[in-house]
Amino acid sequence: MTRKLPKRRAAPEQDKMIADALRDVGRPVSAYELIEELREKASLAPQTVYRSLDRLIADGQAHRLESINAFVACRHPSHEGTAVFAICNDCGTVSEFDEPGAVERLAAWARKSKFAVERMTLELRGRCRACTDRISG
Image (tube, rainbow, N blue to C red; front, side, top):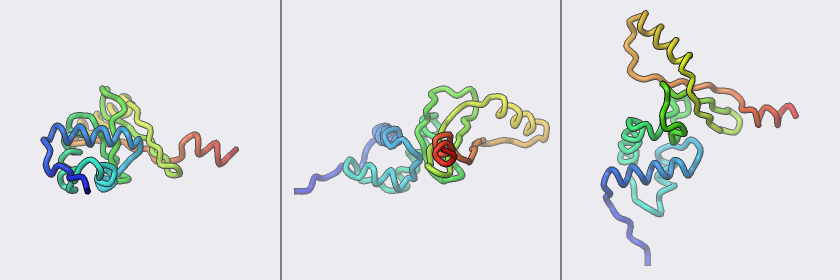
């Protein structure tokens, strides 16, 4: 007999389940990969996962990596400002860190230029230390 999965969950319960899955996966994933990851626990529609991810991002529990259209769990509970991500083009690992000086310089430019920033995502693309060592070693 097949186990019947609950159809609807309360938003906080759903958000926790998705946040836990993001942390457990430990790499950038799409909403569809999250659905697959949670397939045994819940039956989720893409729009439901996207709404949950939006709430998690607003709460600072997750981030969207614009350049690869994927989501990651926040690894820094309190940012000094905008999070910065270093994404390895070879192995796909993502390092998250704060760089307040760079963010402040960009914000100062925006103020000076009267550019109203709605959202800022800083992503560095390249090769991580492990991949660089593997190639040159």
